[in-house]
Length: 526
Image (cartoon, rainbow, N blue to C red; front, side):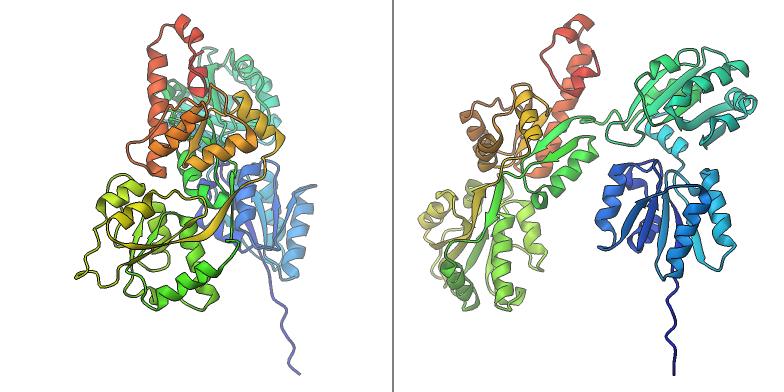
């Protein structure tokens, strides 16, 4: 009888870096995605854990590390012996923690397969995000026990170059006293950074004499930078100087639609909050769509015009129901309004024939859509699958150009449920610095389910129709891009924030304090 060999699990000690999920190495990512059990340290930010959980196995277990190093090592070894892949996720670099080194030693004494995946050191990584270079002979360390620090060695490091330490905020006073006792000049520059590489990273600069008072209110792990590099922060700070850094931006779209917009906002430093205002549902009677799909297969249409990603999705879902694929679009031309809609079509292996080069709207498409020619266009019918509340502009314009139009309800848009009470309160009280509207319906539905944004909130709209609707609802439109697209809308908001910052910087201090300009940009100058 052949005995089935029990699978052998692996153990990985993975460095999470200083906190920004984007700083995870590819090898760290692969180890986490393949893990059955993840034990994480308290220093790993919840925002990073959320990203890891979203990409991990569906049944992966996440538990906080508890007890002494030997206890954690036992958990990892037990998992591996059961055939599971176990990961200990630690802040910074694994070998930057004495306790993790002891765990690795304990695992190495067994037959378990293990690896150690380096991470960006917390002290050095946060110093870079704070714009503090560490020139000369540098010393950087993630400190677990301030009592083990050799202050004479640290003082020598400051004299020769720069120093960066990741420590608990409660230990700052002890570090100040130790540095001064070791002979460090009290006027030496110091930076203290909280929430390093996070959405709310904040750095205060002062001196060895005064940094404890300057960092009052900081909690948890902070990074202390000491030396001449601190003086270069004004020119080299980049993370906190991004155009929308610290702006809370309301994105009234579903998570599926908001992904690209939120990613662009985060790249500029904003903190997006996605609030669905529209729910998409199938049409009440599917007969129209059934006939439309049959017509596509039978060659009834010369063109299909998609006005939204939802329309593309609705048609492809019908295709899937009938076992059809992209090949059944053979001979049919496709027009799209907007690059996002075009990308949705391309995802199914089809290249659209027409995307307006100018305004991304019904009018923009009509301006470039050729009139029907009986000789060149033997098939004179257009399929227009849309929402139940779509305007008649496009269908009427196509009819005027000689085309027969099947204007079909592909999906229904209904108002989404109201967001939680704290979101509604923030919308009405000015808790959001900006709101981005991508259609007239997002304006109407947001006001309907949550109320009108506060007057201090910057209102950005994607195009003229959306601007008209916002104005009808009594909103002041601050930002409208020259080209109606999500990337251009975010770019325009970022440019507006830069313009605000420049105006405030040019104001005398008294005028800044009395300025009506709101948001993080204004607060930085007050």
